[in-house]
Each structure stands twice: as C-alpha cells, then as structure tokens.
Length: 457
Image 1 (cartoon, rainbow, N blue to C red):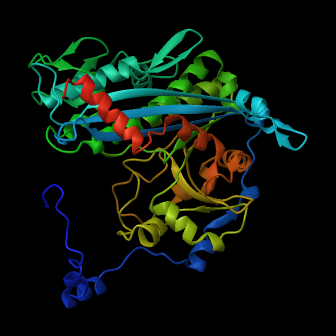
Image 2 (image 1 turned 60 degrees about the horizontal axis):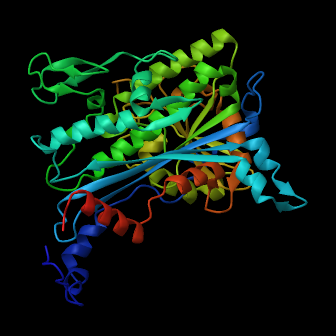
C-alpha cells in the first residue's frame, strides 16, 4: 500500500507486462462464452406473438418504476476511516395515456409531459465504520439506526403514511393484513435461535437486548466496525426498493384492487434478494401467491411485475448474441445454458434457486433493442428449480408458458422504450433521475454535511 500522495513509478508496470510466468498463467484460463452459438440460441427463441394472450387483460394505464442510489463517503478527509452512507430510493409513476398524448402537432408539450409523471423519493443516512451512539457498539448503532430508517421513511397516500417498516411486516403477512411479528434466525446479541420479534418494543427473552424487525435483513452480519460498509449499504438500498414496490402493490390492493391489473411495476435490476437478505424471497413468493389468490377470488387480474437490468453479466451476454435474435422474439434461459454459456459453472448446480423470485428472459424488442427482464410466475411458484438433486434437462421452469403475464409485460415494455440510453425504458430512466446521487461535487457536499453533523473540525 502506498503512502498518502505516494505515486507509482511511470514504468512500474513493465516487469509484470514482460513476465513470461504471468503470460503463461493467463493462457491457462478461460472465460464464459462471449460469442454466439447459433444452434443453442435458435432452439431457445420464440416470437412474442406465439405466447398466449391473457383473457380480459386490459392495456396498462400506469407504469411504476423503482430505483435507488447509495454512496459511502468519508466524514472527514483527514480521517477517511470514519464513514457515512447516504441512500436515496424512490419511484416514478407514469400515466401512460397522458404520456403518449403529450405531443402537440408533432412537438412534445412539456406541460402535458410533466402532468403525466410523478416522481417521489426518500432519503436516508446510515452510520458507517467508526461511528457509534453513546454507550453502543458500532453494530448496535447500525441495527438501531436501520430500524429507525425503516420506521421514518416511506410514502404518504390519501393522508395515510406507509413506511418501509410497514412494508416489511406486509411481506411477512398477507395482502391487506400485515404481520404483527417476525421470526428471525437468531438473536444478534446472544445467538439464541428462532426468536420472535414483535413490531414494537421487542427484547430477547434470554439476554434482554433490544430486537428490531429489521434484524431479519441480517445486514449487521456484514457490517464492519472498521472498514468499508458499501456492501450492507447496498443490501439496504436494494431491499428498500423492493419493499417500496410491495408497499404500493399492497396499498392498491387495499384501496383499488382493480387498478393492479392496469399497472406495470418495474424494478431496476433483477427480481431477487441477495446475500443476507436472500431468505426474504420465500416471504415474497408467499405474499405473491396470497395476492393472486385473493385477486382471482375477487375477479381481478394480477399486476404486471418485471425487473429490468441495465448492466451485468447477463446484459453483456444478451448484447453479444443480439444479432442472432430476431426483433419481437424472446429467449428462454434454462439452467444448462446459464451455467455453460453465461456463468462458466457446473451445469449440475441449479442457478438462482436461493435468490430469485422472477425468471430471467432475453427479449429483443420490435425496434431491435435488447432487454434482460425477470418476471414472476403466476399465480404462484418458484421461478428457478429448487430441487436439491443435480440439475439436469429439461428445466421446465424456463418455459415461457409458465409465465402467463410475460406477453403483456413485454408488450408494455415495447411501448415505453427510449433512445436516451442504450436498451432503456422510460419509467426506469425517470426513476433513476429521481434518486441519483451525483459523484464529485455531490459527494463533497455530503462530506461537508456529515462533518458538520458529527461536529468534526
């Protein structure tokens, strides 16, 4: 590691670049496929128009996209190990009828365009390394502050406040009826297993330490009292995006269930919970099953829910094979293709069973743009094989016919494309605009703000 302001010599790379041992080592390696296998692609693609049209499915009237940003900054330049995490999570609601009727004799009327959109966001700050509340450890401080963040942030509709705390309880309950308690794997303080945590003022029966329902996220397991905490910051951001989405779904279920069928909910990124939050996917699937059961009983169709990815391995692979997929076609991604062509993994290991509540598909729009989407099964079911046995074809979970809302979802995405960014859709671009935390000047301002709040010189 260099000293502060110590720079490497200009020719310091030459010994490594000219090393025969290094060059020989790199010849032994391989990477996932970056070229297309036309035969493998051809037997997995099908035209969008071949998918079944849902009976009585109305055209979407609204698109609701959710996104988030996070940044970890030092609270003081001279003491960079003291860090603070800023998070911004929000959604953009687009009235599709108003949006598509915003042109005025060939020109876009900005007033009509603005009326067609409504973007909202929540901002939060969480402690990083070397920051504590008086009398608490760093992990205790993190747990308490995370709980307070979930209690104090959410959305307000018709005079009713719906917090992230409420959404977490909703996902552990049933539509319109949030749980009153949550079971966590163990007490973070003493380790006693299977502890039930009440929504308010919970304590461990063994050690009497404070418990919070946000302990179910287990982000405290990844929190570093000294070092970077960008991983738990990002875990919280991703979870908050998904809780905000389920909060709006549940609010509509309670107040206007018929409107769910005409709303497209778009998540930035895949429909998944990663890392310490991964066990929540079972709760999401249980809620989704109960929601669809109740909607069917009432004579309503389920909402369109989709994750759209901007970057990553799957996006890179989709772009690499785009020329071999005709416009208006989708490609099912079975386990064997994912593991051998995209991830370079053992094809006998099932992919995605521990994280995903939606199935990935490649879709080439009618205008030739590639989208990587994840869509949940309807009315219920795991999107990836959850068997403990070795993975072997056929992987029927990859069959597009297992996803009745897939056609309507992709047709809706076709309508909301934009040329502003590569392979982008308008609602996600608007959601990101609402939550983006700028680097450079923006980070400097946040550093000054943290420094002042912490009383640092």
